[in-house]
View 1: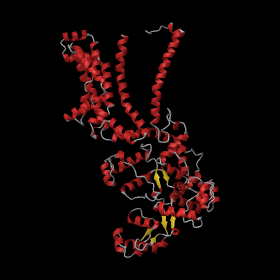
View 2 (view 1 turned 60 degrees about the vertical axis):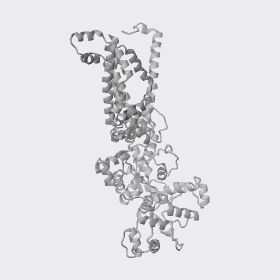
View 3 (view 1 turned 30 degrees about the vertical axis):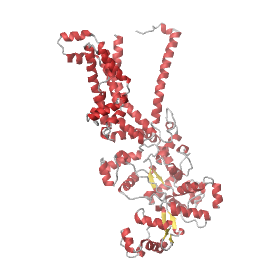
View 4 (view 1 turned 90 degrees about the horizontal axis):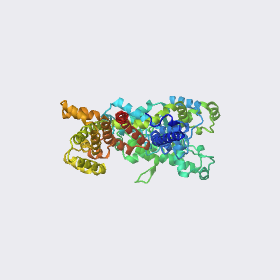
Length: 635
């Protein structure tokens, strides 16, 4: 029966009361839903948009923001590489702009070039492999791990043995950073690097990005050296560039250029550019042989250091591609940069005119020049506006934007799920966190549903003289925070030799004073006549407890079970203190470890995933709890 009658509901005051009640409830609901929406939104963020607090992520409805996230992930969150590859001069990923269109003719031409050209493996790398800032697991890193597992098996120790690596587990596996533009970083030939290369070659070309030697020269050398003021550069270099986009790295020594321009080119080539991009004219062979003879002394010493069997220095051939490692790299570095003989004081150095540069962009320019002859033909056939052949760059932005336009849905879905996959992968494959948590929670719930009801039943069934003193003592335990008892419990468990066991997790919280207090009050409200009738029929004490008391107490038992689960599931500090062995860590400890090595968005995703089991258990217990509240009131 309703509290307010049908006639009473027609009153303006009653309607106003209803409106006030429902408005208050709606506002209260919003105060709970909005923070949850912020967390859901935050779990899909990356470094470019994590600082924005919005209930609905911007990339859901704004293509410009989706493109920012796409470029950020594609370039492995390396802003300098974006500037070099796209010819940009931006200070953050937020400044990445959505292109208006892509040149499909230029894309097709570059694809034709790649099919017939031998593109060195060090000139490009796979995107979506590393998230240096967001610290999440991009799609190609997940694919790489699956590829390795399929090729070498699931055992990380076997993988380490075959590839010569030392990864602790699958979660610590990361590919090397293939950024070889600068001299101090060189490609290496190891089994793991070869595996990365094989995997990289299996990916679609839209997942690559090429390193731009020209962009590196302009953005990371010239601008860093002379600043962004092109007028200042023109003044010191006797040039007339309108902006830095017109300045390009020459593949050969610019003999006709101004002195300062030649000086910059020589310094860049001799000291900064990656050695794999350099090519040496074979006409310097005699001088190079003399350098080797002075540096190593005799051919026997040279053969020992190089593990070769030459009879004379003249038999040594200049390699087409400079070596990547070993004594050969050291000698080439010394010969290019300049090596001074300490005995004679003479410096041995390859003449700068004999050095040239080779990169994908220079090869592409040569390909276009050979095919179209003049820059006017290029612009006419490819719908471009180049001034010179030096302006021709790898159409990376066109390739990536064309792919972006065709796959917006899958790109969105990747950003929605990748942080959750990162968390799931971490907790599933890190130790026994999930299994330990399941066992711990089950034991905690079972013990709470046995120990606490037995204690409450004893005080309710038998009127002990000290019942209220016991209750007062139990209530006093609620006055002390759990961490106050953590140290005494730890010392006690250590003395009993129970550390790093489930007993250490269960025993300290097996009996709960608040739960016993609630159960006793509930048991006291049960009809005495039921017990008297059962005793007349010959029921044992166990029958009275189990079939009558426990059967009638399902609502309060659901509350106790939910409380026990929450305490066990959310237990972090005490679980970490008494179980410091990683094999006994629960999920909360692993999530805390994940937080230390992950970004903010991954942390949001971990909190949402961690909340799911609690929600499921609450929904499971909800019907029993509500039945205990609603049914008695209706009766």
